[in-house]
Image (cartoon, rainbow, N blue to C red; front, side, top):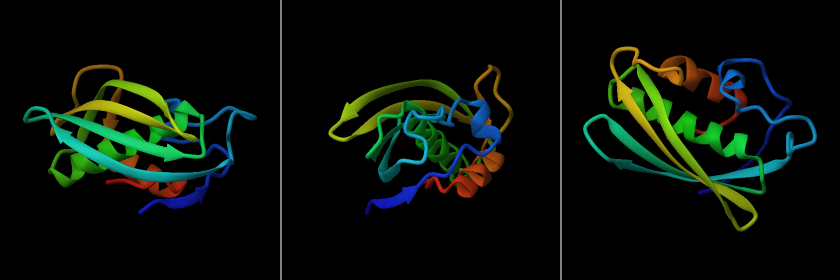
Length: 132
């Protein structure tokens, strides 16, 4: 069931470094609704996430939602890390949808776009972004 949340100003933290904070005047603080996450296991450690938000045209918000879902999923599966592979964002009504793929692993994966799942989930909770 969708929950309407009001996003506060960008909080410095892990997701800020990933570009999850909206620039001033670009939808920051706008009322959005998190409309759910669908998870697809593509391979043993490769996972797809379809997420949607309503009331926003801010790509960073829907991307942050996908990142939060991936981090929580990694923890649920007993892994501590994830690596972002790709994200496609499309418009959907008054909001956005993201189709994101992450590689989950127990050890820190190679690459620049890695996620410490535990730290990311804590950051998501502080920012009011739901996880899986």
